[in-house]
Amino acid sequence: MKIIEKPVDKEFQSNEPMFATLISSDGELLKHLTVNLETTKKLILSLSPEKLLYKYAEGKWTIKEVIMHLVEMERIYSYRALRFARNDQAALPGFDADKYINFSGANERDVVSLLEEFTAVRQSAIALLNGLTDEALARSGVMNGYSVSVRALAYHIAGHELHHINIIKERYLG
Image 1: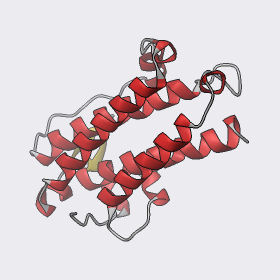
Image 2: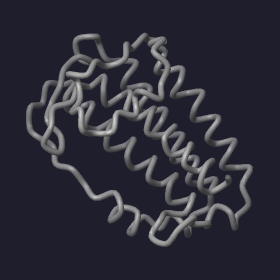
Image 3: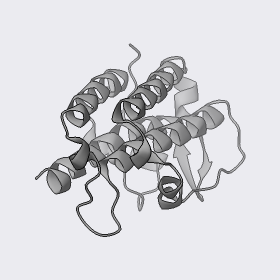
Image 4: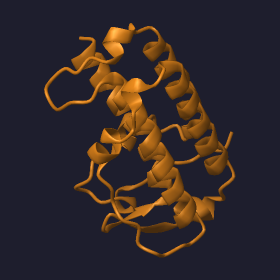
């Protein structure tokens, strides 16, 4: 698989969480995306239906909603990566993840269907990233008011998943 080097500080806004710090600097991002998905699916499938609907505090998401959030974020970040890789310079707006979850219906869905959608979105992201040239990965654009490179978006996808899996392990299962 393609080697994608980690982004440097100038490729993302410093006051935004940079989930890339959770990913190894070996450049094997696509391998990490593949392995992490399988690890996530194994963890989620090991949980009871009751645990999948658990919230560790008022106003927090259920585990099913967290999975849906990962799907939605990955889909949006892949779209942003495509736009910027193709040198589209139109600024892209942000979005409210809480509002997306409120209308997602995640808790009414079967966990297998959520994971099937996650797998499809992940495979699509990997195919997109694997097909980009180094020049395309280095391109940047403006999203939510700040500049970000395609490479930073790619690492954000992988690190964002690990961030939420860590929260699940610590706050939902700990």
